Length: 235
Image (cartoon, rainbow, N blue to C red; front, side):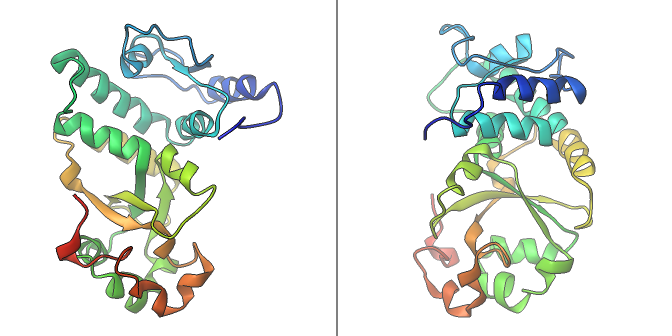
């Protein structure tokens, strides 16, 4: 996509918000959104952020949304960066990422947070029981589940939505009315060396009640190419 914002002062506004809110990386260095080419080509992106606190931010929607997620979930983003950089320091840059770095990247780019104490709904998602999750338990999404976009690439996709957008959903076992500050601190405390892609559940986000008007019709969920049964799970 093109420029994120028309104002020439957008990066300055992000940095002002970062400073006002005291954003820091795992090493305690202030988070600063810099020019996109600030990092050295010889140093991995995640390692550069961990070492300096500087987040290379180009003038496009993808990087702009990444900066917004740092402002929204500062502790969780700092912890994910710590896990990613630690894995790189240990394993180097390899074509196949290990489970921790793989999960951290999936959450960072495409994560959806399902904040709920209703474990039966998470079980329904894992079983791809879309009828239970989105039709029979539809009312639960207004009272017992809060869905928050975490991945900046996922948010970018939603700028021009299409039916098959599928997130990597992570269960956050808090009350649905938990504040984003509470959610952020929970995530930061829970992201550790046991983080795994197995904790993530594929969820077609336009199926979430209230997110897309056409899903008010139960027939919306009959599209098996999007709402796949368990035996057709994506790899």
